Image (cartoon, rainbow, N blue to C red; front, side, top):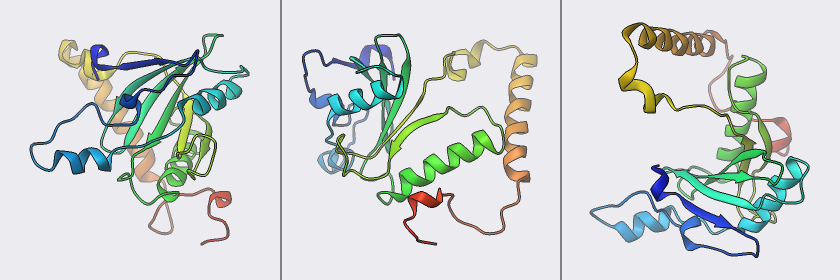
Amino acid sequence: MPASSRHHLSTSPPAFREEFFRNTSRQWIFNETDRLNERYVKFRPTELQRIAGEVVQQDYCPDSTKFAEGGFNKVFLLRANNGREEIARIPTPIAGPPHYTTASEVATRNFLRSVLKLPVPEVLAYSTTSNNPVGAEYILMERVKGESLSSRWLSLTTDETKDIMKQIADIERKIFDFYFPTYGSLYHKKDLNGET
């Protein structure tokens, strides 16, 4: 999302902006109202900022920016007074089955990071239910600093492109070489409440 279209919210004093809840990055030719409603998520930004602050040993993350959004998640950058930054992902209603989508994303990220040792941002906190102070499911994770590949892709040399493609292929090989005895999604046992 271009910086000019990012929406900024500083909640000191508390302020709520509708742009945080609704889709602001896309338009539809047909049934636009329906498509926008499918992606509308009402939540409590100040509670998200409070929880994000606790994760980095601060009282609060006073600075919050809508960083990106796609069809399935809204992504926010939260910055604490000590400079620590976190990314918050809030799924939209069409992301998938409530609870299970967030639970599986967390377990999959943790598996990729801890078992396969892939460079995946660390999950710092999450909730698989909207029955929480934020009022929505969320994932808080570390922000990985750096430049996006898409911003550099056209200026890369052939050798740099080959090196990046090899790195991507190596990551995919690690994933595809891992043997899973069954098909399905990954979950942490604690997120299934006795389900199998």
